[in-house]
Image 1 (cartoon, rainbow, N blue to C red):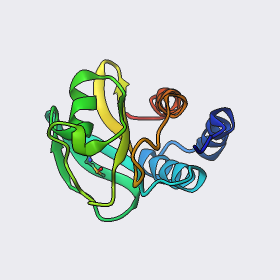
Image 2 (tube, rainbow, N blue to C red):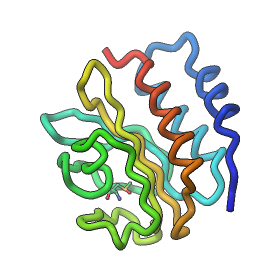
Image 3 (cartoon, rainbow, N blue to C red):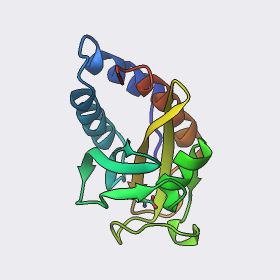
Amino acid sequence: MHSTDYELLLAQAEAITAGETDLIANLSNLSALVYDTLADVNWVGFYLTKAPETLVLGPFQGKVACLRIPFGKGVCGTAAATRTTQHVMDVHAFPGHIACDSASNAEVVVPLVVNDQVVGVFDLDSPTVGRFTEQDAEGLSKLGRFIETLDWA
Ligand code: SME
């Protein structure tokens, strides 16, 4: 299986966002960084809470994706509703999974919580069942904790 140096990825994430306060600019570059760094991923990006209990598509890398996801629906909505990282080996076994791209088979979704509000989620898809390991889920959750420290105001 692929292994990612999450300490290095975190350092790079800090470096490319340092000194920039524009959230969309930062999330755009972060999605590009992670998409380029991780092997065997086909979608990396953000859904942002733009309406009550609703995730709206944000900056991402990958194919055209679903626009709006209610909290509680699919993997992203479950991450938002439960405020816990979702680590899914096979999305087809996940009740209510939303198939934006039929090529996606594994997924990690990290909720982003700022001032006790779910401001969005960080979503990664892979075409390979079981692609994401526990190490990935932990590393990506840590990256999520860093993303929460960006300027969300
Ligand atoms: N599969 C996700 C939807 C978002 S796309 O993967 C980009 C879900 O079930 O929430």
